[in-house]
Length: 161
Image 1 (cartoon, one colour):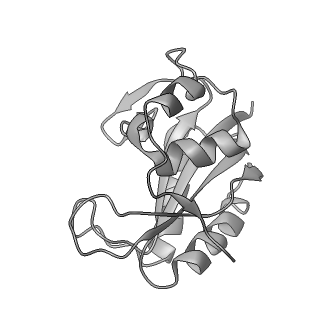
Image 2 (cartoon, one colour):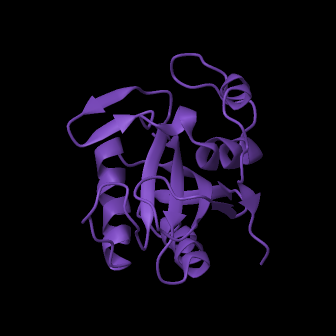
């Protein structure tokens, strides 16, 4: 049985536009998974330690027959292939792939929390998500449109390619 999963993508090291673009292609190559939709790319201010370059972000919608933890493993393999290093919490990174939503499930596992614990307060997740699925509701019934009213756009802007 296949489910829909939403993935948040971000990069602020190397060539972020290329990192995110390549990752979108690689998401479609995960076994038993296909890329259904993707948002445009957005530039966002970094979250975390000061002095980081801006991020390039996007959200992708996948259809997958993988279990949530199997999908997480595949996402981490893609991050590792992009030389992702986990040195500093919320520090700069070549590629960050977050499993935002997995079907309508709420998952609380030591390796994975779904919905992603910070997604409701991050404009670089909510606005790209709204671009591809504006009427979605979180597993607790909260409408994405309700979250958008509480999360200003700020300096988030589409990336000019």
